Length: 103
Image 1 (cartoon, rainbow, N blue to C red):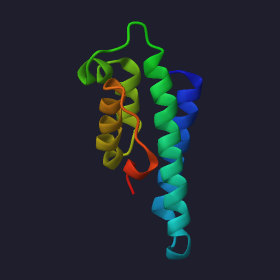
Image 2: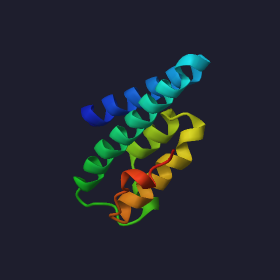
Image 3: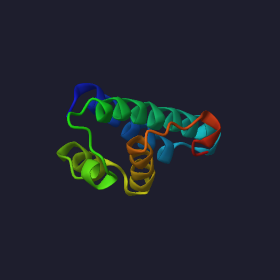
């Protein structure tokens, strides 16, 4: 896996874990940090996808790559659908604006 993508994935998983362990006082901050790390990961993932030659034409082709299978295997189960949704948007060349991102 690309080193930048690996680092971004690790940050996302780390922030997810910290969010789950946060007490009530720190839960909002932990959630914000996780959200930021998830979308930073998606930005790096988008760059990786757009750099593929040939670039996958369908979501199924993208998800069938070794890198995507590794990502899905490593992501916490509740994040897989979000990842697949973002991957689909990448295939469609759609970029979310901040208001459209998950809250």
